[in-house]
Structure formats: C-alpha cells, structure tokens
Length: 180
Image 1 (spheres, rainbow, N blue to C red):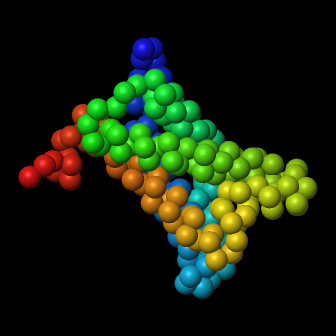
Image 2 (cartoon, rainbow, N blue to C red):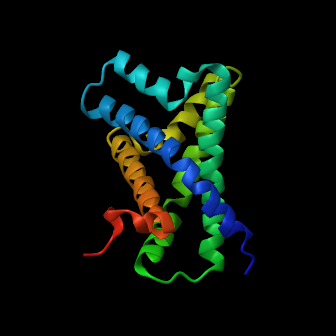
C-alpha cells in the first residue's frame, strides 16, 4: 500500500487540531446559543467574528478559512483513502475509521460550503448564499433539527480529534489516554 496519503494525513492533522477546535467551539456555540439560549446579536457577531477569522483582518481571515476548510477537506479525503486501503486493527483505530466514514459527507459539505460562502459572499446571488449557509449549518433539515445537527457534527469532529490524538505517539504520552 502506498504510504504517502497516510503520512500526509498524520503530518497535517496535528496542525489542524487547534484551528478545528476554535471552529467547532464558535460554530456550535453560535448555532446552539442562538436556537436554545437566546444568544444576543452582539455575542453572536463576536462568535462569528472568531469563527471566520475576521479578527485577523481580510487577509488573515482568508488564510484562516482556507487553512481550516481545505485542511478538513484534505483530512477527509486522505481519511477516506485510509478507510478504503487499510485494515484497521485495535479498538481506537476502528472507532476513528468508523466515525470518519459516518462524518465524511457532512464534514466535507460543511467545509466546502463554508469556503464557498466565505469567498463568494459578496459576489453570489443572495439565494445562492442562503443555500450555502443552509447546507453549512444543516438548516435544510428544519429549524428544530438544525441545532442538534450542528451539535452532533461538532461533537463528532471533537471525537475524531480525540481518537486521532490517541492514535499518535504523542497522544500515547498523555495521561488522558493511558489505561489504568
């Protein structure tokens, strides 16, 4: 089996942990906070400001969105390659693979539509922008389901991050992942 996709996956994943955690936290807090806790417009604006990297200015925001969005897409594609080509052994690896397979389409759709919206927001017709956001945040499932979708997708990605860390040599050194 060609090891290049595996090595690439293992090399870029650690660099995306912190940015993905920021995206997960702010995205879930915004959608769930707005739907269930009456998040104020000001607090929501602050969360989106962090979520999109606007606090770094236009160039920094573009780099942030590309880094996280394309990074998640690349991890999804290399992870898919690994699911197809390798035979996982051990409970943590099987869990990571199965969860990755389940989350592949929703995560890829979320990353892709987030990228498209961010870079096309000013040029796209309003209806296209609305469609991209509906897909990005699961609004197409209906208003009552949207916060659950976002929360489950965020928790799923968090579980992917934690299970991926557990598979690394560095992850084995953390007490959190030791047995006994």
